[in-house]
Image (tube, each protein chain N blue to C red):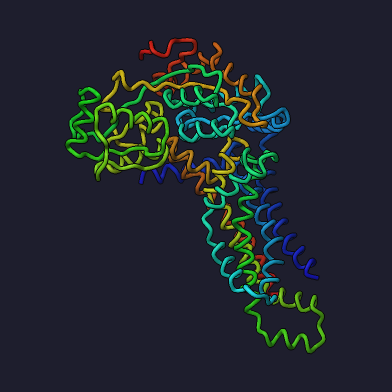
Length: 232
Length: 307
């Protein structure tokens, strides 16, 4: 109990004093996971739409693969990205291993299936009758797409929230392809693990509280946006 | 049109990120003007970026050099002196050696002399130099249920095995794990059974497990001292000649990969054995623990190390 109390106090100390190292780690975490989420939106929403509306043999298999990938262990993604980016790997010459870019790549791979899966699920839920009705009103394909996306805004933002939540909290991939390098690839999750093994549990608790606050703030922002969008 | 909507979603996410970034960024900017410490930290960031242009060196090392805080002291000095950026990857010694063998790292700082020699012999590592040592200790619950306190190393291990008292092993092919297996082998015991459990994790985590489950474990002294306040385990056996923990630094053979930064690796090896660095190593930890965590050994004969 005493330890937890000390950790909570430490968290407030770190926030109030704006400990420069913690500020830097927090900003880096936000930047990496934010960019990874943006990439997953760019990849995930179009692919999700295509998956929902197209009809090709083996579509169900593709959907089931995407659904499985939604729950892919980050550490597995981390291992494969590591193997690709390692000096002896196929993309070794890019020298991306142990850089923030490597973490962004891994996190985008983790978040994209989540966004694809939830987007296609949301769009598939739109009533077929609505599509037919729109068609009968003479809507073009693009107009229809826009209307359907509008109809599913709430679910689409939920997909973004899920994607972001998935990557900001993961550690396996960040550790493996980022290497937890001080001042360069150390993010909040890897810092938490390191401080724990260093015997600085209070600092670890403090960082974990900052991580939860950060995840909450971003999700809160997205949720507010979500509800505003729906009201419109 | 779809582009429009996507753009909108993107813009919204982006603006949110920017707002958050701005809030945190702003607050740190504010402080830059008033707080000297913060100014130096932003300068540090600037130099980190500059260093990245000059070139970086991947240092694969054991967790104990990072977890004890030693590298936090040494690395910035090296970066300052040479202008290289050090990418420290703290893993178990087994993994670090493997990274060396595959040319994934430029320089190694590890503590498993026998396994290191293999890399030197097969040409994977060059320029291997003795850096420092400390010692391993056996820690266990306060009550010492197996009664090993005051025994010799081999007697103690036999007693733990005979009484089937819980022993927590790293089980992760780290330097400490290799050392532990060597100790069991020396007394002719093959540790197995419910009393012998492997965590597969780093020293810090393993010490916590040993403390929570009231088991014995082998640890390097530096990591134990760092965790001492947070765990219940006590040092029960120390000072045995078999418990020496020796660290070497070595370059990965540049022939292993075109991407190896041999120049920076060589500079790091030279830095680790330089007089100034050796002094820093000797002084490290004295103010916090009242004793040195590592004993500087550069230039000494490995066979004549004594505590």
